[in-house]
Image (cartoon, rainbow, N blue to C red):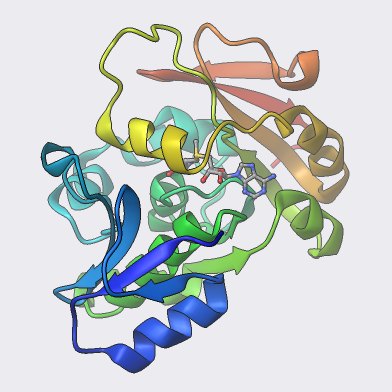
Length: 248
Ligand SMILES: C[S@@+](CC[C@H](N)C(=O)[O-])C[C@H]1O[C@@H](n2cnc3c(N)ncnc32)[C@H](O)[C@@H]1O
């Protein structure tokens, strides 16, 4: 069964093209988690959880802009882990793109990022977020630096030209299962599930990356594939394990 998309907007041709590209099913109405196109944006919505709120990719949102302008720039843990504090225009293959937040931070600092996402719902949200971002003058660099690749990480790692950095942020089960998980995390766990195959990505990532592989993990988590990194950079909420291949 494929995922439902309900069109409440006027752009029928665009919505049909989205369904074709990402294997979605255009329906009149839907229950549970579904995609809706309304007010010129594609959103993920739950029919029975009105308080949950819509989930969408919005690179021009207040939060994204604030982080871009005041988030610490090249001194952010993720930027240091990827080496952007040493060189701005690194090529990065983000093989677990999700909603593109990390990719956006890296691209806003100068990196050229290919965003690989295998889940059709998440990939469609990203595609639509990248389309809307082009309408914002302050994001006129984005088209040059962020490119979506709807594929599995394994396929992308096998097919891409070498890159400076491979970045991985697979889903990790929340430690406190009783805590009310953030709304996006909850949606992701319902719609995407967990990434149980993540360990297998480290070896091909180490083959492709020319400079380093960076793995984002919760502070309490084991190393990916039980393989100790060269170093770790500790962020506010996460740890970035860095596997250094060559100096930047
Ligand atoms: C935790 S989220 C990434 C969040 C992202 N770093 C961000 O800033 O928004 C993990 C994402 O990686 C995707 N993913 C996991 N394993 C993958 C694989 N093998 N190939 C492609 N995408 C994958 C999942 O579908 C999910 O959307």
